[in-house]
Length: 220
Image 1 (cartoon, rainbow, N blue to C red):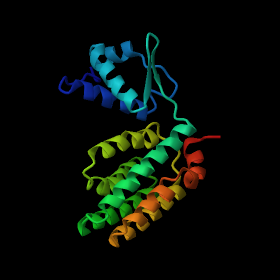
Image 2: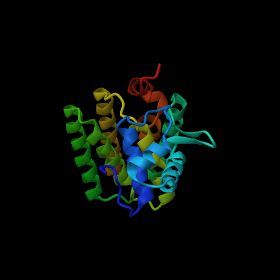
Image 3: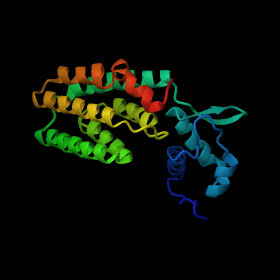
Image 4: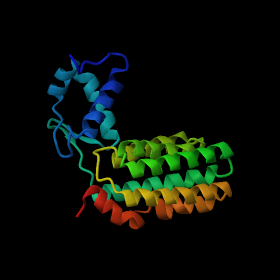
């Protein structure tokens, strides 16, 4: 069977399978998850499927309704607002902490990633652009010793940008690249407070990004 899964790390594989189904628009926001059908397609019991769905519920992708089933969550305007505020606060805290620790090699890596992102914007390569954007931010986030903060924001970003695919807006991405350039300049100067202000008050500011957010998610 094409969808059959290797039984090593089965719960993780089922989780990734469901994420892929969401990413490809097979499991759509507002739809029900047919556990029986998925279990049959994958040739598995419902136990690893339940484990994967619990993980997805913790990350905000689905809601498990006792005795009713599982619903794929819609992403509301308020969800986006809260996500931006949360990620902005955490990233601002971390970048202020690591500004004195970041190496010249890491700063050069940030430059290379941002240049790669600009090429992907011009090519309209949204899927690779998302990964490059994660890599850019992870370059300085990984310097921090606070693993809890780092693990907390990653699923928020995935829910914002990886499920489902939305409208590619080149001018927004180009503006994000300009934010990145300002961040790099602050890090070169070891200006943690300046870098934190860019992240919290510009890059992850819902109010500053609201025009693009409405277009990206087709909010009205």
